[in-house]
Length: 238
Ligand code: IPE
Ligand code: IPE
Ligand code: MG
View 1: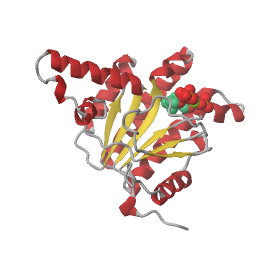
View 2: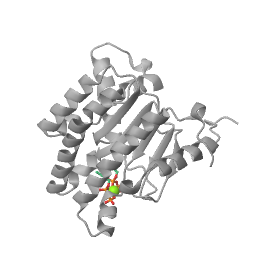
View 3: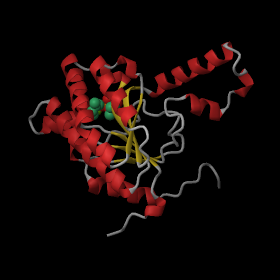
View 4: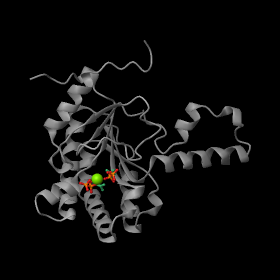
């Protein structure tokens, strides 16, 4: 079996965790059941990522567009998130995992916001791996928010328009301070980015698997990492 080269690991892996609903449907279960199994996969993949030495793991958990789903599904997803955060705090502390969130978190229910805030604060000095949950996240909304931030600074005479460059834009995004993802994984076989990290994935390697998120395991993750290690990244150079 080919081995993953620890020296050539992607520093930042981002995952579009898709296919919970289809997984449930195939089994004759409710979509909520699919999300529950999806949450179990999150636990496993976070642990595995930490073990193999991924520095940044970013998970698309709830998109800005997902608010369009039926209220009972949204409610169940928030409940699962609350439960996940409460149950995983100890594990995060033991394994040096720092939690971060990106997205319009202010739109989340108050109880979820509170647990998120607490967990982010309590894990803020951990240095093992940064786990970022994208919640109420949209790539276009992120760019809009960055533009608002930058224009605000111009209006207050803190910067001038000619100081706008790629670095300033990057630093004005929710992901400020994080490296861009090296590898983007999407489960369930959809060939689209669904408004995820639009600015940040400009030179990201993409791996799409047919596996549905609740079935995604260490073997699938290994396959994605091995595939990544075979790629030649040129960043536009000859
Ligand atoms: C991903 O699974 C979870 C979220 C988007 C919250 P889906 O719920 O999108 O599952 P499918 O795509 O309908 O199978
Ligand atoms: C993307 O999945 C969002 C998350 C995984 C949270 P969706 O299921 O919402 O995306 P589309 O509708 O297939 O593009
Ligand atoms: Mg989906």
